[in-house]
Length: 149
View 1: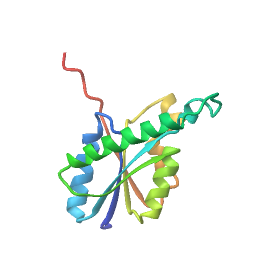
View 2: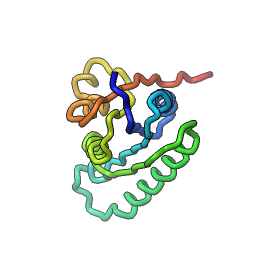
View 3: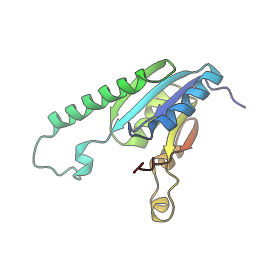
C-alpha cells in the first residue's frame, strides 16, 4: 500500500465535517503526512447564472472572509497540525484538482453522502473530484446527524 505524504482534506464546513476530519487525522498520523485543508466557495454569479444586474464583489469578499474565518477555527480544533489552508472561489471539483496538483498531493479526502437514484445520476462533488483527480481520492461516507428530539 502506498504511503501518503501530502493529504488534502476538502471540507464544506458543515456539521458533518468532524466525520471527515477524524478519518483524515487518522491517516495523516499513520503516514506522518502533511495535512492541508481546502474549502471552495462557489461564486455568487454561479447561483444567478452570471446574469446579475449589480456588483456582487463586496458580498463575495465577505463570503470568502467568513469562510476563511470558519476554516481557521476548524483547523484549530483538529488534533493534528494543519500545514496549509486554502479558501478558493470557483468550481469545487476544478479548484480541488488545481490545488492538489499544485501542492503535489497524493491523497484527497472528500465527503460522500451515498446518494441514490436521480442524485446519483446527476453526480456529486465526491464523484466530480474522483474523475480527473491527479492522485488517490478517498470518499468518506458521511451520515447526517439525527435530531435528538
